[in-house]
Length: 623
Image (cartoon, rainbow, N blue to C red; front, side, top):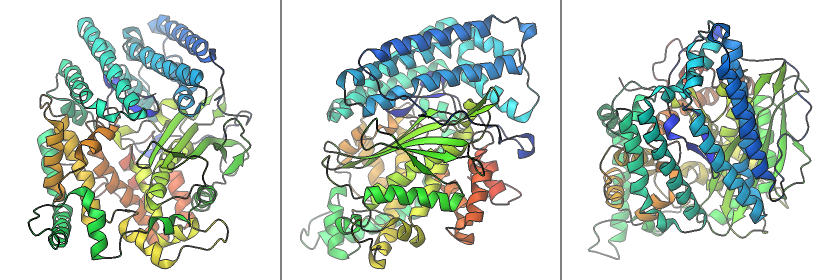
C-alpha cells in the first residue's frame, strides 16, 4: 500500500500517493530477524510539551528532512547504489516519522488547549510537507537509477518506487492534483473537527465534496472512478463488475439468514402493530427481548471485566500464547496512560514499546478504538530501533468513574491490540516495510481480525474475566451469551452479523463508483435493506458518523475487509486444531506471521504458517 500518514488522530490515506502492489517472494530470500543490540531503553517517545515548542520542532524537522533529501538527490548517478539511495531514503523518512507522527497522539491526549492546537497544526504541516515530498521528481529519478539484487532489498525498492510514482506525472497534472489534494485534506480536516465537536450533521454537505474530489484526482490518473483506482492497486486481480458480482454472490447465505431474522422480528412486531410491514434497525433490541433471553445483560457481564484487570490479563494472555513477556514501565506524564515494554525473544533487549489508554467519554454514543504507529522498528547503525505505538479505546461514560468493559468494548480492544501486535513484533530491517500502517497487497486488517478470534473462545473469556473485588469468574451462562452473539448487545442474529461487512463493502463501492454524488442517504437505505432485510432508521447518523468511507484508508477498498476476515479465520483454524492457548502454535505464529509482516506478502505468510503447498482457500481472490 502506498505511504500512509496520520491526520487528526486516525490513520488516513494520503490519496495522491496511494498505490497498492503485490510482490511475491519465497521466504528463503529474506533475512527477517536481527540479533543486533538495542539502544538504551529509556522513554521511547516524547509526548509532553509546553505551548510554542511544537511549531519550532516541526519546522526544524521539515528543514532537516529537506536538507537530507536535497543531499540524496544531488548525488551523481554513477555513484548511486542501494545503500546510499534506497536505504538512505528509508532512514530519512523513518527519522521524519519518528519526529512527527507523535503530534497526532499529542493532539489527542494533551489537556493544554494551546499544546493541542499546536499539535493539530503540526500534523497538518506534516501532511502538506509529505504531499510535496512524494511529488519530488529528483527523488523518483534517484530511485530509478538503482537495481537491487536481493529479495528483501527489491521489496524495499519497489515500495519506495511505488510511493514516488506520481512524481513522474506531467507537471501540469501534478499541479492540478496537488490543488485537489489540498482541498481534499481541508475537507477531511473539517469532517474530523465536526465529529470531534459533536456536529456530525454538518458533514452531510462535505460528503459529496470529498467523494467528488477523489473522483477528480483519480480521473487525472486515467481511472473511471476512485473505486476502480483502488481495485486496480489492491493486489487482487479483478475489475469492479467482477468484484461486485463476487460480493453479492458470497453474501447470499448470510443475507438470506438476516432476512429470515428480520421476518421473525416483523411477526413479533405485528402482534402489537398488525399493519407493520418492516422492522427498523433501532427496534431490534426491544423486539428481540420479546423472543428470547439472548440479548446480553451488559451490566451483569461488564462487572466481570474491570478495565484495570483486563489490561493486565490481556498482556498476560499475549505473553502466554506468543512467548513474549510484556512488562509495565513507570510513566507519569499522563494519568491513565500506561507504557509497556516487549523484550526481544530470549534477550534482555527491547523489541517494542507501546502505550495503552482506556478512557471514558461523555460525548460518544459507542465505543471506538485507535492505534497510532509512532515509530516503525528498523535497523540503524548496527542497532535495532524498537517500534513504538499507542492504543486508545474510548468507551461511553463519565470520566472519573471505574471503567468496566462490555463485550463490544472488549472486541474493540482486541481488534486494536491486533494492529498493535502487527506493528510491535515485526522484525524487518527497513522501517518502510515493518510499519503496521502498511501491508503489501492491502491486507491491513488480517492481524486485527485474527486476534479478535481469540475473544470468542471459552478459554480466553475465562482467562480475561474476574470481578475486581472478589475475583469471581464469568458464569458459563453469560460466557455462552457472549460467544453466541459475538458480543452483540442489541440482539442481532448471526445472519445480520455475518452480512453486515458485505453491506459496508457494497455501500463503499457504490459511493466511490463515479455516481456523480448521488443521494447518499437513499443509497445507504437501499443497500442496507437489500442486504439485511431491515429498514435503516438510523441510516443518516450511521453514514455521517462512520469515517471509514470518507477520511480513512478503508475508503474505496472496504471490501478487502471481507477477504481479510477470511484470512484471519484461516490463521485461527490452526489454533482451533492445536489448542487456543497452545504456546508452540503461538510461537510459530509469531515467527512465521508477525515477525516477517510487511516484508513478505500476507497470503504467502499464511500459507507457510498453515503448512500448505498452495494458496487455494487462503485469502481468496476473485478469478
